[in-house]
Image (cartoon, rainbow, N blue to C red; front, side):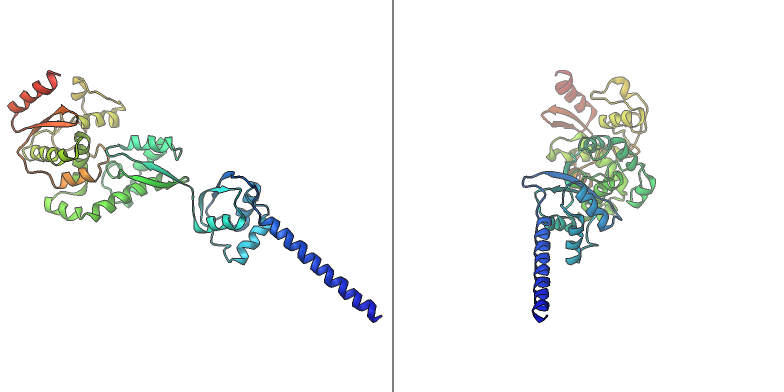
Length: 339
């Protein structure tokens, strides 16, 4: 009887060992990558999703072998509530522990986009649409959201002028509102980081006035070294009560209020009334016409000291500046009419 009892224990220990070994083998198999070759899968972790929901979806998409094993792995690492929401680009050739690392560290899928200096909100909307981040109309609607503008400290009718031109890395799942917040936050970072508020107080002008003027400088100037001079021309004309007569304001007015896109203006366009037409209206247009970069903002706040009231394009981005109308007309005949 004693021998039989000992034999039973030996068999039980063997079976437990065998079960443990099989479990270990099964665990090792679950911790292996699904594929031996790189196979990328885009995966969205939605806000509020439970870990089990995430694990189930990962298994369904063939990113992990076992949702239960993935849950056990996260439980052992005490990371069941550590996954960050957002879009991811996961590789099926990665083992589950590496995939869990990516989700916990929040290494979300990001796209690089560049907003060139001088782009208006319509052009930026097209950039975002081409990057397949959102529809242009969604972005434009967000730039006109009154509650969002108030939250971001913008006094204008849209976010035009405050969508700072820069190269950004944005998550693929970014919303239109989040994109506007990102671009405007960068504007304020640049503005405040350069103490432009203090300079605005010295000039006795508010931010919106200065951004609007800078947006015109951005569209008129080509060469960085001419920006402070062109800014001085507009400041001088404003002080003398002269119309700015800036072609880019006419183009933007036609786009904003008439939905007419013009590469070249006609005489009729110059006579078409809009609240942006500085050939017909005195002072600044009702808001910015583009999104100025750092150089244009700085040139507007710190313009050159000149007596110039006019300028005309000479070619290759250069301009001829004049103090009197007579000098200006002579320059027009030389550089425009002759050409």
